Image 1 (cartoon, rainbow, N blue to C red):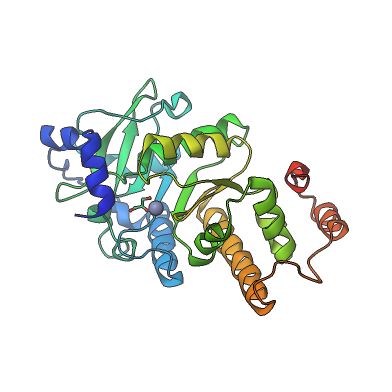
Image 2 (cartoon, protein in one colour):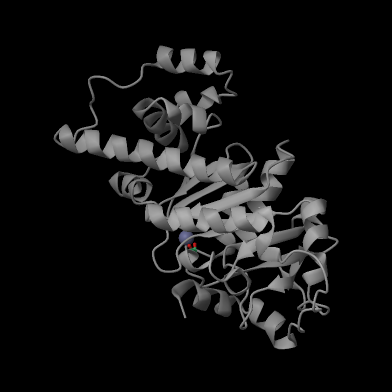
Length: 309
Ligand code: 2HA
Ligand code: ZN
């Protein structure tokens, strides 16, 4: 059992759901297996690619996708006839009421997701008041949703409340360079954003709303979910000191590529800094005018507040 599984047990929520038991699947008589649907394949691909990037040591990282009505309909015949009991989110997410989330399992090693989706992931339905979730598919062998399920739901709810109705994927990864950056100093969001934007051209394109940063917070806790909610009201990326990054995207590519770009920008910054004798006094970052030109040419919805900090 992994560290964060234990943390969730201490919270004592998910265990209850499983005690009540998830009754066997309805034995779908027709329709394509859940694993064959595009959403499941896209989900598994992110896990596989993230593993290949080195972002998912052990059971590190997790992924959630908010399913559309059509995707739910495609999978519904495979849902358990008796879902688990309800388990409260650490914060309510009324805008997700009645929706279904496909999410990785607590303790799952993401590299195993493509081989056994039903064991390493599953679907939860959100209650009609947005206060709780229950398992409707997957999490075979007494599994349960990721310890960050409340954080993921809070990310989605905050992005939707901020007007991004299509926000539907939350990807949490542990990329080395972004984590290493947080060891250097206690960043504020403006300074971190400026650093990543100035390091390479794609930075501001991938994260025009900026990158928020939070100090050390124990993974899998309500405090982390709250930090996600606060950050995602303005930006779609949050770096957690000494831990990793949460990105919310419109689809799998959007979420994955945002992480990928920020991680690459962080790597370039760290490499340049090492080559510069450890100093961040570079002779030649992207100038403010260059960022303004980029924003104009690509019509980016840039949050300039992040350049003023
Ligand atoms: O172990 O990454 O943040 C899964 C995690 C918790
Ligand atoms: Zn994590």
